[in-house]
Image 1 (spheres, rainbow, N blue to C red):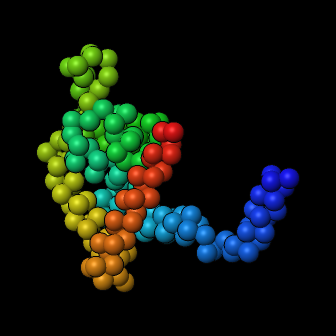
Image 2 (image 1 turned 135 degrees about the vertical axis):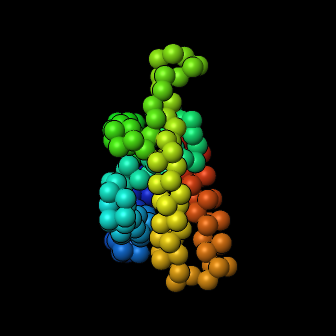
Length: 161
């Protein structure tokens, strides 16, 4: 009987919840709109795809980095991170070397040209953040950042459970 009540309560809650008011829907909307505009900026300013730009930024921040670590740092699946890294290698922005630790894997670092592009990418990222969050005061931005960190930590904890 209690399962029935829970199902009825869930059904009633889902009927009263409007999709556009769900936090997950709003976060997805922010993500899609932000990705669209950021992809445009990466393409127009650097000739990079969104994945390549994210990988370049992650390599610059965490180098030397393995492809697995790059995938985690850039929030891409391993295949996408690997293809993006290879494209950056082919453009002369990233250097790929055999890992000294195991001799099988590779580590990625920026070339001199990659370092220069990375610094320009950081400037673009800072500008994009000002554009996206400029509607919030500094205090609101700080509070939002703290709340998002708590949500991220909770999701990571639940994923590990």
